Structures are given as structure tokens and as C-alpha cells.
Image 1 (tube, rainbow, N blue to C red):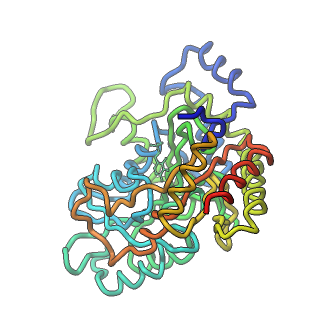
Image 2 (cartoon, protein in one colour):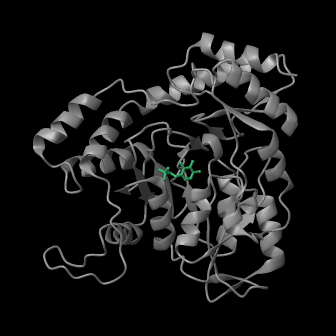
Image 3 (cartoon, helix red, strand yellow):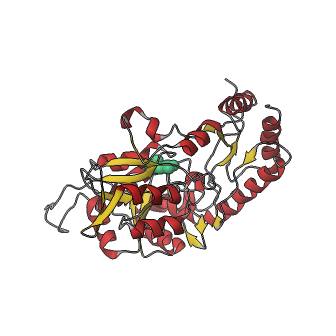
Length: 382
Ligand SMILES: *Cc1c(COP(=O)(O)O)cnc(C)c1O
């Protein structure tokens, strides 16, 4: 195994990270009561143009809480893409709900609004202000679109369809901090949006996440659930099953410093994407560009290689050159834990994108020479 010269995604610590973390340590408030937590929440809310932000331990916890706050409970169904990281579907399963997988839109890689509308018009009905599945009799309690690799799905159409069928929307915006769709920040379209600050995301707190929402009641529910559902600030009285999901101050200190650099990271990552696009322009590899109406953070760049065999040859060629690359996630409808899966029809686009897509090094600190080195290996793998 050769040494990795170009990793898929590495964090860049170029701002106030050391200073804020030291200040947090000096204050001794390293845990959840820290002032840095509130400052980080306020900064994210203001950056995204949303009223409330609740910091939690990771993006998976953010999804779990957001779905619970949206009313998902045992015995419900949650509409979700299959082409996503397993955490999306797991968050529904944690609540005893079943994910129902919907095919991807080839133009965004996200949940396809046409497939969704077609499926609901055949299989759903609205009764008592909620959506119910005609065959299973279960409530369709939420729709969870994902911004795949940072690219927003067709949120205008998805919101319209879900609105018509009375289905609350929760966005998995864990990959898309800094992206916008029709000028509005990713994560702010639905009832709530989940963010992640894992080490491989566009900004990191080591591990961390956040739920953003404009709805005050939802924000209050999120805070309550994330702090063991403690009812009263003094007495230890808990009025429902809660979680210890609050983000520690030390992570929030790191997050605040990272957030200050978000605009710079987006700018640099968009430049990396443009370099890839121009370096691959003469080849038969389809570089994934941002969807119409979107301004993407280009969290991870990707090429569509046309076939699974070619994708494999490309990944082997890159590995031999010390360049890290990955396939897309094995789709959720093919995962052993969701066997047999609930699906909304067949998922041919999901399968084809999964089999032939390769994700490429995308760190904000990449140079044009780095990108051209990757492109050269790509062009030499027939
Ligand atoms: C990263 C990620 C998550 C989970 O975030 P963590 O902070 O790692 O728990 C969920 N969904 C998607 C699509 C992700 O990429």
C-alpha cells in the first residue's frame, strides 16, 4: 500500500482554532454549559439566515432529533433516498420507523420529486391532516432529502409535493453547509435541517452536528430532547425519554473558528471543482457539476465513469498513484439491515450512479497541480 499523497478530504485549521480552544480550556467550561456552545449556535443561525440552531454531538444525532421533533414515531414510514450514507436511514430506524427508499434524480443525485409525486399519487392518501400509506396503513411521517456530496436536490419541487401530501420535510444537509439553492441556504427549506461537523466535512469540530429550524416550538423540543428531557432547571425531573446529545464547549470553540473560514473554504472548493471541470473537459468522464439553481459547496468532487468496471479501474489507478478515492455508498435498499427494504418502486438511477461514480480528493487546500495530477491518472484509465 503506497502512502496517501492526496487524501479524499482533510480539514484545514487556518484561523482562530488554537486561540478559541485555549480560551475554552482556560475558562474550565469545556462541557455542555460553555458559552462557546451558544456562540457557535448563534453564529451558524446567523450564517444560514435561520432563527434557531441546536448544537449536538454529531450529524446522526441531529437527524435522529430532527425526525423525532418532526413527529416521527414507531410504526411510521419516512421517505428517504437510497443513495446516501447509512446514517440517513438509521435515524428513522432509531425511532422505530421504517425508511421507504425513493430513487435518485440523475441531475442532482438527490431524491427525485417526479418519482416521489408519482408514487404518492398511487400509494398515499391524506386523512386527518396527515399522509397515510394505502397498502401498509402506516403514517408517512416525514420526507428526508439529502444534499448528496453537497449538491442540493430539487427542493422547490420536493417542498411542493410534500406540502400537497402533508408530509413534513427534514433536510439531511450534513454534506452541504455553505451550499445554496435559489439563493437560500441548504438546510433551511424544511421544518428542520441537520448539519454535521465530522472531521471529513467542510468544517469540523472533531465530531459534532447541529439542527437548524425557523420554528420556535421545534427548537424548544430539540433542546429538551438533547438534554435528557429535563423539565426544570433545578430539580431532576424528566418528562419523557431524552438523550445526552449536547455538543461540548471544546468542540464548539473549534467550530466557531472553523465557521469564520466557511466562506473561504467554499470559495476554494469551488475553485478546485472548476479546475477539475477544465482538466477533464476533453475526456469521456462526466464530471459532476452543480445542479441548475444551486450554488454548491462541492464538498466532494465526483466523476461518472459509465460502468462499474471502469470505476474500479480508475480507483485502482488512483490508489497506485497514492491518490485516495472512494465509490459512492452502497445504496440503503441493498443493505443487510434493511432487508427486505421498503421502496417506492424500482431504483435504477440509484444503482447506476452507485456503480459508476468515483469521488475524488476535494480538500480546500488542494492546488491546481494536485487537481491536474488526479486528472492525468483519470485520463490514463480507459
Ligand atoms: C456525514 C453524514 C451524516 C452523519 O454525520 P455524522 O456527524 O458523521 O454523524 C449523515 N448523513 C450523511 C449523508 C452524511 O454524509
